[in-house]
Length: 145
Image (cartoon, one colour):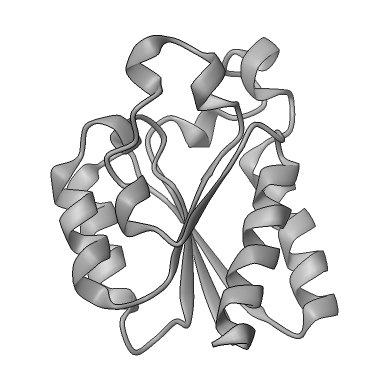
């Protein structure tokens, strides 16, 4: 089983960007933690990050036939990207939406996710551990299918 982790804008700044909200763990640290858990589960993972909406759309589209599921932290695009929502709904793969912070406890504009209705579920508010939970969810969805 192969799970693709996609990370949206500004996640390359994790560890230094607003640590009071996002913590001090870097994206590389998170990737290492997920790889460790994935090895225990017998799952391959691939990580990508882009600040560009179109790149994320391309990666979602390219995942069909290459990956079994996607774990997606779309960051700000969660709340704005119809294009990303359309890509998710077009590929026929289970997508787990994930966020480090609890988006429902933050600014009102972050409460609405445009991608949630086309994802199998959402993990939000557990910091770096959200990625482990998203991995577990993606594996569970595929193994239960």
